[in-house]
Amino acid sequence: MRAGIVKDPREWRWCGYAEALKGQGIARNGVYEVLGQANAIRQDGEAWRKVHRRYRQLLMEEGRQLRDEEDRVVRKGLTPEEFEAVEARDFELPAPALLRHKIRYFVDGLASGSAAFVESVFEKNRTSMRVKRTRGARVPKVAMGGIHTLRDLRSSGGR
Image (cartoon, rainbow, N blue to C red):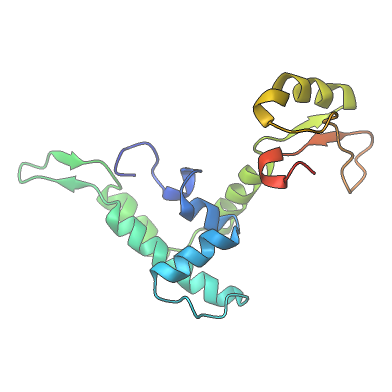
């Protein structure tokens, strides 16, 4: 936000906040730790929503735009109007935004299509994936009429 790359920290896929939003346990534990809630019962969805709301508030406050006495921007970030809009929602993410975030992480690195297409994607990217397996195409657990998938091998352990 302050660097002007993203307007919301959830958009920066390499930050712990984005990882926590997608449900990654270690990242969520870090959020609990930062807020002094390390001993909270984490299975409770309402507990996560409260912790998330507070952490998001901290991030958004820290990511506000700063201006000097002459009203020049000295640090990029959320404009007063953007901050007010987030604050009006009590720092909660709207359900569609949260769903888009989770879907983005589901489909990143995913190729889907015919077995031949997925195999061609796998062959082109095998060395960068650093896997030992010899075939890329996988049949999804839910049959999709001949559609095969290639999962993000780094996050799925190559399965």
